[in-house]
Image 1 (cartoon, rainbow, N blue to C red):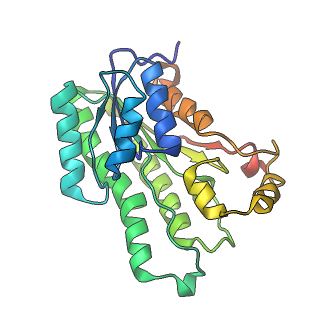
Image 2 (cartoon, rainbow, N blue to C red):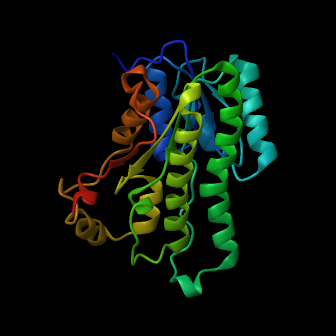
Image 3 (cartoon, rainbow, N blue to C red):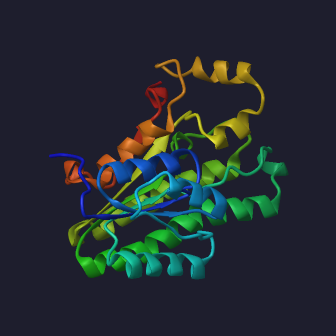
Length: 251
């Protein structure tokens, strides 16, 4: 089987940069008609300008139910259906120990990363149930598998939660033709990673030393896995939490 998504409609959230942008381009290369969404209209529109003319940008803050409902509704109005969804929108939040973590930052991060994933799934699943099939991929993280001394309790909690949502939906909807899986990227060279590392190349080098492949991954390497999980080549893959981490979790 090929990773072809010809004649299918794919939605990518967080498509304005990093993994989301790479995924939008990869879905388009695979033949899908792609709807890109992002909270930043300039970055989202920039992604669409890099894609085929059939691609569309729809702005949305995934933490807000009315905007997510409108996003899925407009996607179906424009494209007639929704076959694939890559729920990738996320923020990194603050760097602080748990007892010092700001309440408002926790609420925003959980609102985007966890509630936002749930809201997208809620309305994607409603549409896919009408169609009788579909494929959803959520972006978790290696941080969804482990704890960390990295002072990122909210981010880690949100990514554990995404895996819980993914596995639960896979069990609930697999018999109805809907597959739900998750990607768990490790150290990927994205704008978010650059913000976390700051202007500290030595820190990046130290992190790479803990990765068996001794390098950071690229957004394209994550994007291709998302396309595969949405394709017929992964037709019997459901409830998977796939690490893309150069072997980090193998330790």
